[in-house]
Length: 200
Image (cartoon, rainbow, N blue to C red; front, side):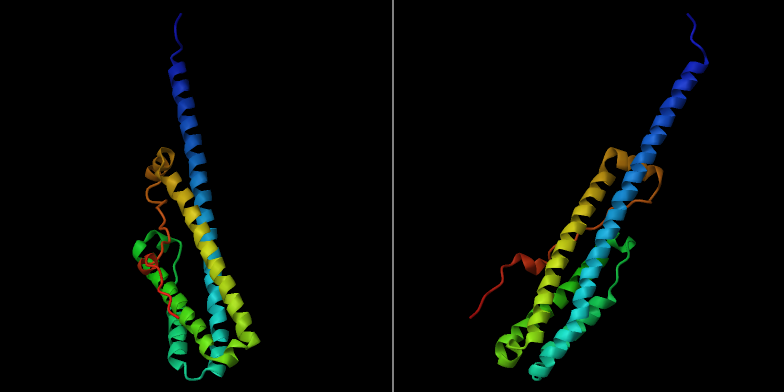
């Protein structure tokens, strides 16, 4: 029984078609996971923007009741300006140095806000101010949103980076050049590893 000369070519064509189809599917998977990272990043940015929007109201409320706390208020205003000036694009999330600078600016703002909120203990008028209390509750809620958004972003990055490092992902990555790059996780600041000292 003779084998048709077209049969090996046909089998090779079918195999190539299957490989191409698998490659296309994997490309789509990477695109989808990359878009989830983008969405989670946007959610995180929205939470940071909410915090930045609350800061001027909080500063003005404190200023009215505690005028001598100008140094603290100035530090908050400067930290907010610096944090708002550093913007990261999707491509920047592949650069550890840019992510670290962004996180440092956000950490500085959070620290300045913490010092500002401690001021209330020294001023009974501020402590009893309903507007201040409402702003404080909103700020605490915002910090929780920021934490959740960071966790969700890191989860999306884990799914994307894992897919990218698997064999299928690396094949697509090599065949498309540098289209897909690993994203950087957000991590705790170095000083977050040390437990805070509580003084009474």
